Length: 328
Image 1 (cartoon, helix red, strand yellow):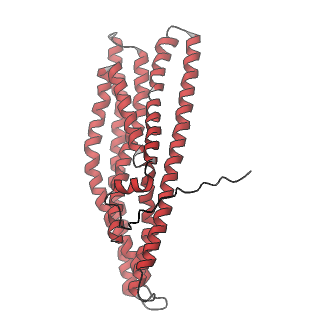
Image 2: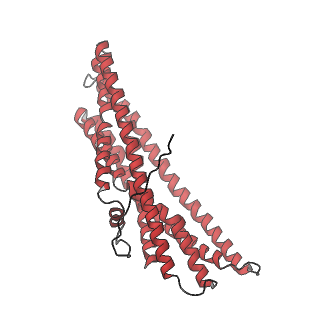
């Protein structure tokens, strides 16, 4: 069997070696109109995510309750077809995003390597030269991968996940406003708290990246065979600083995740209590409650993805600013 060979996207040079003035200009420069295509696929995926919720409601109320076997079979087949279709489109979307990201990373590495080679002057054995090489390795090797990785899903991921939330909440509010309102209330604390915590995380990330660059410079300046006790002590101090930085980041990052998981876990029980009351009062059906519980479970994932995206976008913006400053 012939091996699959996928070539990276050709990014046409602009003739201007200066960095993009913002993260979003950078994303557009690296992907162009492909962003429109991935966003269209993302919208279709978001729309298809609502169909299973309505189908579950109909399965319970229109097929199972009246014992309509023919309708039960028909709705089950439609349900499976929708799930398969959405899964296939989501797979296509992820591969498309990955191709755009990896194409951007490959282009950026070649571009930055060329710029570094052109601007690299002086004695190759000097400490300044070694420090310059150490920083370039850190940026071209690792930092650009995090920035370029944002290109593929920089627009499509917020589109698909926000679409799932908007369509899902819109559907629930239209079917049963009181129960749907619970979902809206459950989102408010997350939307309010995450930006505050993320701001602190961004500051830690910027410090970490700067320290990693400094350590790359210091490691490049070490001379084999010579006594470098002072330099080694400086590097060890940096390693301790990186450990402290990472632990602080863990406390904030995992604390935020724990809070989000707790709030998401509250939604289903609230639906059961409020919805159960409405069922007892004869104001809604069991099928609605079953569909809503499934709906909230489905919406917890895009909500986590959106909050994760906000975190990644904030980090990418920091990374873009720091790389742009290095290029200048």
